[in-house]
Image 1 (spheres, rainbow, N blue to C red):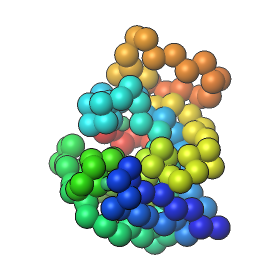
Image 2 (image 1 turned 120 degrees about the vertical axis):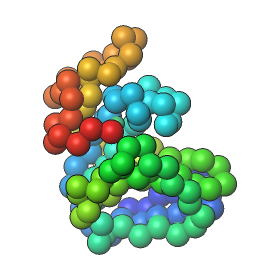
Image 3 (image 1 turned 30 degrees about the horizontal axis):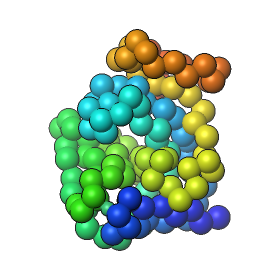
Length: 134
Ligand SMILES: [Zn+2]
Ligand SMILES: [Zn+2]
């Protein structure tokens, strides 16, 4: 199963060639600031299933975390943590079909804005379910 996505302007395109490892909504303050939005929904994929083409720019939001953006339009695309070299986080909302992978839980509720209410009944965690902040 192939899933594709890319940035708003179309300069960057990517492809996921395997089943994702997980999906979640991150409420941490770093995701909020880096996106200018209340939360980011992330898909975790195995690195060997992910390929990307086009002009990107990176920002290290912490010493261990590298985030990738389209160099032309700024769309947020990926998240990589040095402690998880086999994994890439991909923004679910940059997928061509963002309905394909509904999130399964929420992380970092302790950073949340008090007006963010999902009410979707999914498991919610005050910090990271997996222990990799920001
Ligand atoms: Zn772009
Ligand atoms: Zn986050």
